[in-house]
Image (cartoon, rainbow, N blue to C red):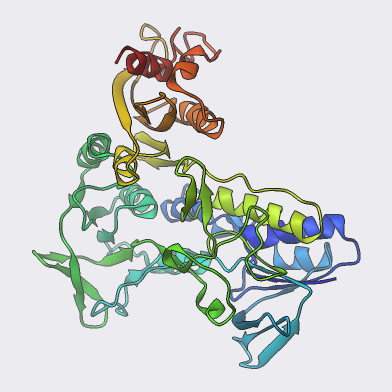
Length: 445
């Protein structure tokens, strides 16, 4: 069997390794339009701040490792342009030589990922304007992050925008973050997002909300950002306006797509076109709480989907169960966690719901260094089934968030949350865990 995989990062190489493991005589060709395989994109902000010493530290396996150790025909600078399901061929261009290539396949995996959204603003090509999605992106920022660059402007208040605000502030830069919405951190409900705003103020990070960027000003290098309300001087701009799936080349294939053009698959990661699979950031994810496909491109999901695609491609059936929409972000002194639905999402889906919010301590209140932790639970008003949770605090957020995600995966109610046997000792918890206290409040309600 000949397998062709488009994309050499998390999803693509997770699939490749399953094929290597279970089909000894398989011929595997991987096509990566960049030069680097299998690296941790989520670590990029921490290379900018210096917490991670080098972008090389993010690489899990080199191209040479895939070639020499695992026998994969791992190609770099190969950009796919078309897929022909009738002839079962993939064609594209070698970026370095300019030559056109054409490959046949028995089974194909599209793991082409996603690219940053770059609005069509005037001045977008000025020196000092960046996005952050790849190691070359990070290296470019690091190479040009001179001492005389003091004023940094971030456009967009999502995951990368928030993390990069911390990274630049850690370096001693003056940081401004511009968001077109009413607040930063739109995955959270407004009253939870206020803690992000308070933290930004505490660390002298300027938040500008309810403003739309209209242009980037400057001669050869960026000098200012113009919005529909004001003009802000700046030395560097990071655009963090979200991502879009790299799926333009599937338009003539008959492959079904959905949100933002992301590819729709079945539970076995196969598309509606036989022998063509898809996984990772170019793909939709089934949201277990919403009961429908969604687009939440995250590294954990890409690795899972890729592994499952690889297993199914070699005839070892395995279902992708879906996601619960779990994410966690570090922002200065706080950890920001969310899983399942927010109130806003429940409203849009017309789900009958209630919500409770509490402030507690992350450990026993009398134990030294106990810190506040803020928890919000959303649950169905008709049967008390948990719909989602948001947790913000300095410590103890991650373990509670994972409990809630597990509860969502198993369709538990808030009453069952109260019944859980969770670990307790004063240095680690109170006798009632904060999420159980929130659950008790919901049941009293």
